[in-house]
Every structure is written in structure tokens, then in C-alpha cells.
Length: 314
Image (cartoon, rainbow, N blue to C red; front, side, top):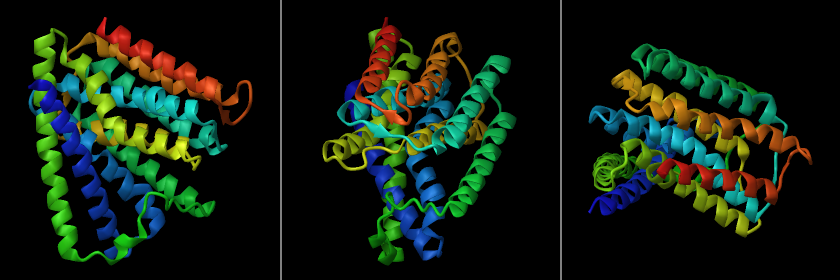
């Protein structure tokens, strides 16, 4: 029953997330927001909503390890699982913006998370506000850089959404909100129940099953694109997702309900894996061939991810 609850929760989160993205983009068009701003802010926030709802629901229910495990596990899965499998299927070209801006920001936010947990064993409301202020600054810099370099991210934006009626937007928002609420409720309940039954902590379920589940839509889209020999994956988008997971998901959750760390393993084990995966992609991008993330590099990080999952259960 607990596995069914987890699967139902994941399905509802995917459906809810999709409707929320569509309604948010359609509403942004109605408000005459530029495509660039929609791509950099609206889409990014909307796609982080499933993780946010899961983390918030878990924190409110008193299972804050799920809040932390969900984000830390998702960040590990984004690199080890999504980037690893996509690179195995098709080598990726990496632009210079990766090491000049995206990667340093991701490392900064990752180290901030470690520092907050190490110094107080929690993410307080003040630290949550700090994360939210930092993500706003990051977005403003991102928009300024995009304008300067004439970069307009439109691949995630469907032009057909420009003609959607207000009635449809409201219906989509309601469907998305309801699906996200019940999806997060179902996922957290199922995860806690499963952890109790198989005798592991909620943290173990959250950094493995829940984290993989919330990464599946991104993985599926990247694999399909790679198999079709299309632009498989933007490393910038993947790193952006990790930044949003830490700053907006944990930041907003902590403002509503401070996230108190319950398992020491999060600080002594999981977060070091997250920092390790975040760090290792820099030397991999440069060695031995610059700006090419080849198949064997994909094998290296995917193997490391498989090792992480195995050791977590052991």
C-alpha cells in the first residue's frame, strides 16, 4: 500500500507540475511579461513546485529529514542519474558560461546549505529568508546577463499558450494546485509508511526513491531528446535546477516552518555526496577534452550514483 501511495503521489506531482507550468506561462503572456523573463523565472519556479510542496508537507508533518533528503537527493540525482545517463547515450557540449557563472553559484549555494546545517543543525527562518533573497539576486543577475548576451531561453515555452483564455488558466491552476497538494500528501505518507515497514529511516527513502521520482520527468525528456539526436540537455538548466532546489525549495519551506535536521547522516554523509557530485563535474568538463561531456564521463558519474544508492541502503 505504501508503494502505491508513493507512485500515486509521484504521478499527481508530475501532472500537477505540468498544469502549473502551463497556467503560469499562459498567465505571464496575459500580463505581457517577456519570454526571457518567463523562461528564467516563471518556468524555473513552477518546475520547482513539486519539490517545494513535498518539502513543505514533510516539514509541517514533522518529518523534516524528508524535506532535506528530497532536495539533497534530487541534486545528487540531477547530476549522477540525469546527466550520467544522458551523457552515456550522447556526448554533451558544454558552454563557457558553465564555469564562469552557473557552477560557482551552485557550489556557493551548496556550501551555504552545509554551513547552515553544520552551525545550527537546522535551517532557521532567518536563513530561509537569506536563501530567498539570494535566489532573487541570482535571478536578477541571470536576467541582466541574458539581456547583455541576447540569450532568450524559449525552448521550455510553448507559443500556443499565448492564446489561452483566463477561464482555462484558472481551471489549470486549480487542477495543478489540487494535484500538487494531494500528490505531496500521498508521497510523504507513503514514504514514512514504507520506511517504517522496511526498517529504514525516512531520510533513506527521501534521498533515494523520492529524489529519483521527482527527477524522472527531467530524465525522460533528456533521454528522449538524446535518442532523437536533438539538443539533449543543457547543463546550465540542470545546475539551475539544483540552485532552485536549495534556495527556493528549502528557503521558502524554512520561512514557513524551520527545518530541523533529525538524522546525523544528512550532515556526515548525504551532503558530502551532494558537494562531491557538484564539484566533480568541473574537472570532468575540462579533462581530458575541454567542454565535452563524453560517454565515459557519463559512465563515471552514473557509477558513482549507483554506489551512493547502494551505500545508502546498506
